[in-house]
Length: 303
Image (cartoon, rainbow, N blue to C red; front, side, top):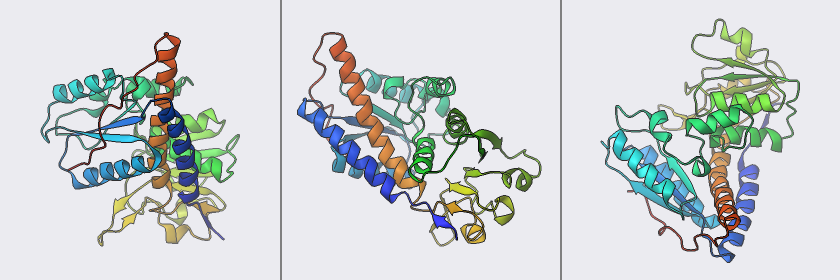
């Protein structure tokens, strides 16, 4: 029988750790602060930023939403990112997608200070991740790994197949799996005979953003399936990249959509912000300075 790998328990444990660490920092006079840069009128992006702000309040992280014009230029976005990166009391920065037409997200994200790049958007962060150096991984990729760990899924020596090669999930999660000694295959739109490849996977990660793309023929009996996809269905409900009904009884375990990877992703963004705040404070102390002790700004709401 297929079991559901729900993210609720993992997210709750992460929030507890985050709240405890944030409390210690606040006792030392440091208020962990996360800046969300928003340059779009997209309602789903506004909803997501509001959700992060609400979640931040619950764990002691201040969330500030830097609202730019919907048609902001690349230079304007980069200027905002540089300003936030230099702000001594800003500890985490997220550049929210989508961006205005013509703006290259990879290029502008290069202006996020790596030590504040809590969603792993700066290409330098991905490079460090690939080299096995300390870096913040994209939160969704990190959430996949956290779920696998919390569910006790063995990775060393096993075959993991990642469907999708984005910088947000596909490539970084492949690097994280490789670092855990899995044998990793990355599939994409040019992969020939996709079912033959994916059906060899002990662990299958679906991250392409195409609803119900993967069915029973794509899944090896007894495989663990992590579904990262979240696409609105015709009736407005969210569906994943995997046809969950088709793989039930075939997969050993599968993440639900919603309720699987998503809650863990949000929790990890705030956890990384607190970790960044702690590391920045330690760096100040190492230089013989007490560090900033005033929060950067009040909690704000996306419009």
